[in-house]
Amino acid sequence: MAITEQTQAIDRDIELLERAAEVAASMRLEVEKRIVGQREVIDEMLVALLANGHALLVGVPGLAKTLLVQTVADALDLEFSRIQFTPDLMPTDITGTEVIEEDRTTGRRVFRFVKGPVFANIVLADEINRTPPKTQAALLEAMQERAVTAAGETHTLPRPFFVLATQNPIEQEGTYPLPEAQLDRFMLELPIYYPSREEEEEVAMRTTGGTEQEVGSVITAQELIELQGLVRRIPVPPSLVSFAVHLARATRPGDEAASVTENYVSWGAGPRASQYLVLGAKARAASRGAAVPSYDDVRAVAPAVLAHRLVLNFEAEADGRTTRDVIEELLKESQGWT
Image (cartoon, rainbow, N blue to C red; front, side, top):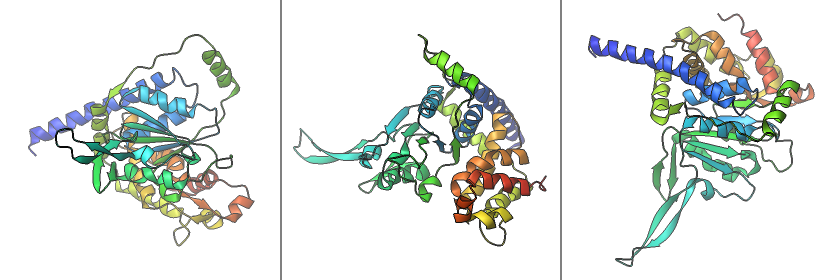
């Protein structure tokens, strides 16, 4: 590449970095027109979007998980599709199915693939754990390969493509635990908590009035694809990559395990966690207009990246420890990294 072309590429990336920060700020403002509080969740969803990753929102019913995803979709100029997961939902209800059609000119019958609701830019998988694992698995290829295979033919999904799923706590009636392979496809797990008293009063005030705030679009599909490309190009110091890998490996019982892991973890995070720690740190840096991610960026995304990838043992259950408790202790043990 000539020097002039290199300079132009650098200038373009600087412009995109500024645009990423603008989009993040505008997205927060638009989403907050409908959603009260949940600022950390909104920021983490932005990280997933910029990193081209999927996100799983976990919380009890009534905490506006679905509304949050719909509002984010409204703020993006993208095609949106909602799938309500129920016990009787079939895999073809998600991916699509083949139908027989008759050619009126020749009289021949041919198969035609009718695309399912997964063929959209943003797919809301609502209450994903209320359907059996067989149907949940219909999303595996779509989430990983961004494609759907039917009758031996592969159909590419539109770009960009995100699955933003909501999940009820598994302790509730009528839920099925998501298999580890399914959970691992989600870049981030984002817990939704009850609002504070002040926030709940604001919710009650807003939602019982006669008007609803309109959410404006802040970015197009092509712009988002360009910002995702920028995130991939953001440089990362080798020491930061080492730190991310250290965190992931420290969750696995064995020679490199942290002490909290040895006590409470049966199964740790795989290599995909290392990738998402680095990618999430880069996306978080881009969202604030920073050219290089920091150790704090890795630490900030670590709970959302690692929490759903750990399987705790009986000791953890007996001591009342959660995966986020384990990750908090793990991050404390890693304070020596700078």
